[in-house]
Image (cartoon, rainbow, N blue to C red; front, side, top):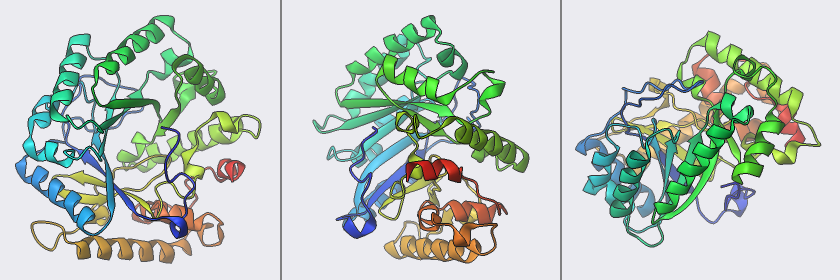
Length: 356
């Protein structure tokens, strides 16, 4: 999962544009993880939403775009109350019928073995294409992982072995909710954590900005300050290659790799601020001119959003003269900043500079 086909591919060299949809269908979750701000009861699906989803996927395809991934959330795939019902839905299955759309799921792997295996059986039944792929993002317990709790490590290894029961090809990475780690682990160091995960699980650590779902200025400001300060203090030239810092990749989540959030039948622009961000403010919504999306709906909102960002750059503290303006605009960072009245840089620019 650390090697994307378009990892270092600028738009000028791209032979296609890839679209993904982050589908917020899963309802409820019995777990309460540190740094998670998902409203666990705000999402669900119905036939109308599935019909619009399938029609939108086909809209990208008929306009010669590549549609290659559904990210299924926002709660734990194995713990949500409606996952098994969703997997039985013909309209949902049809999205994956050609085996060319990756299903990405989120989980803490805290569910029982029987519950995990029941869901794996359902997936194997729903997606029989031999080319089907599944990516699993494992949100882990930061304190227990950092303290190298052997009972927890053994439990994770056991649960990961259950994933071998998937018939589709499976890859996985670990995901850390962005928070102030000093409130969880006093002597926390990111290089130590990522090295431990690589050594014990042979995978990477990604970062999830769940705190941005709150839209609350106090939480956003304090968490960003703590996180950016930690990055600048702990990532150096000597250890930067040991830490996956996707934000520094100018092409990831850029002009040729576009993700939309999907909720209640509507698409929403998906900013990339350390990772995908879900914001259901009205400005992020892509309006439909009818019951279904048209290509003109997509193009109009995309063009309008880009113009909004470039016009806002001069109103910020430093964006207009920043060498990373195009990268942040492609990731819709400035759009998020404008909607929330943020004028200072949200990203750790010194850390980005280390990787460029």
